Length: 305
Image (cartoon, rainbow, N blue to C red; front, side, top):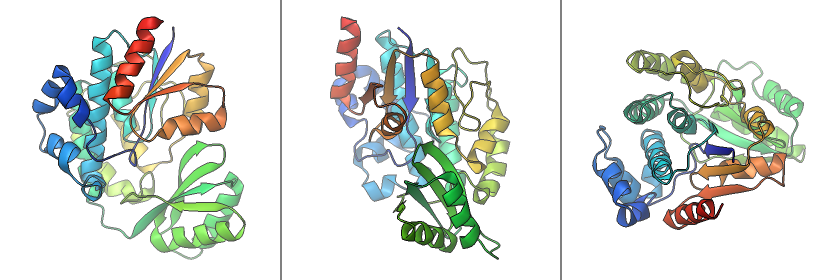
C-alpha cells in the first residue's frame, strides 16, 4: 500500500493541541518533555489561548512540533509514508518525514522561521478568494496596486476555486472589494503577516543565514515542493524562496495524486489540505489525525489492512 503523509500550515492551530497525546502516550510525553528549544512549546500548545498561539512566532513551532510528534508515533506503529507534502510551515514536517532534515533541525528551523517572519513590521493582510479565476484575481490586483509602492500579490494557489492574496492591507482590501463586487467571495485569514510575498524578504535573508548551519540530506521518498509542485530535491535556497514566493499547492496535490497513492493521512487540525484535495477529486479518501482518538482510529484501520 502506497501511503502519503500531508501536513497543513498556519491557521491549523487549536488550543490544547497535542495535550491529549501527552496524557495518553508515554512517547508523546517524552517528546514534549525533551524539546530543546527557546520556545516553551508545551506551555503554549497545552495552555495558551487561541490569540497567543496565533502569533506567528508561536504558531509555526507549535504546529510543526505536533506534526513531528505524530509522525514519530506513526513510525513506532510501523506506518511510514511513501510520498509527502506540506503547506507552508507544514513543509518542514514533510522534510522531516522524507528524511531531509533531522528532528532537531526541523524543529529549530520552524522556530527560527516563525521568529523572523513575526519580526516583519508591516500593515498587511491575507484573503482567500473563492470562485475566481487566476485572471480575475490578477486583474483585481493590478487595479488595486495601481501606483502603489507597497502591493498585494498572489500568495497561494490552493485548489480549483481558491487562491490566496497577500500583502499591503489597503491594496488587499481594495482587491477583495473589487472581487466581491464581481460576485466572488473574499475571506480574511487569521494570520499576522503577508506570507509568501516580497514582504518576507528581510525575514528570508535572516533565515538564509540560519540555514547555513542546517544539513539537508537527500530525500528517502518523493516530496512535492511548495515552490514548484514537483517532486524535487530540497535545499536551503528552495526553503528560503518558499517564504517569499507563491505556494503551488494545487500542482503539488495533483502530482501526488498522479503518483497513485492508496492512502492519504493528513497530520494536523481543521482538515486544511483534505478540503483542497476534495475540490480536485471528491472520490479521494483522506484520513485526518487531529487528536489522540483519530490517531488510534488510523492505527486500528491500518492493523486491519
